[in-house]
Amino acid sequence: MHIPEDLKYTKEHEWVKIEGEVATVGITDFAQSELSDIVYIEPPTVGQEVIQFEPCGTIEAVKTVADLYSPLSGEVIEVNEELESEPGLINNDPYGLGWIFKIRIKDPEEIKNLLSPDDYKKHIGE
Image (cartoon, rainbow, N blue to C red; front, top):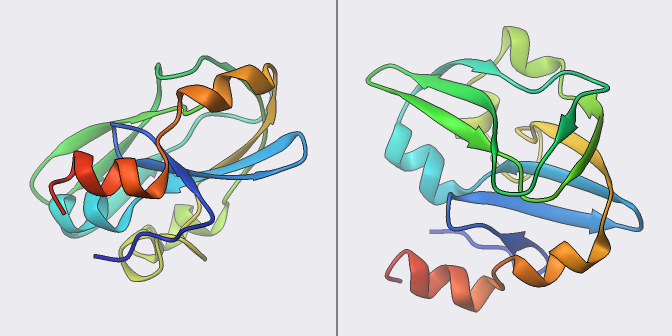
């Protein structure tokens, strides 16, 4: 299971890459493998205000539908348009081309509530 060291994580299996006041969000390799083949994604919309650890979209796989949670509070400033026609990018490259949305971080203090790579490994039992 691939868990990049330069990211933060949530207990709901989202990853976050923080660059200044912008956070890029996706789901982890563990999450995509548990969901199996992702067939549709409903991300939050640009301009939407999201709240830390609250549902903000859905991911539909062949066997199930799962909520997508926001790891931080803020305003959605971009969504990955490629996922509309190619949701499988999340399965193939969850930490790269499969990113889902970007937010402008509202409260940098919330970053402290996220898991480190080591904490996430413990959370998934690795």
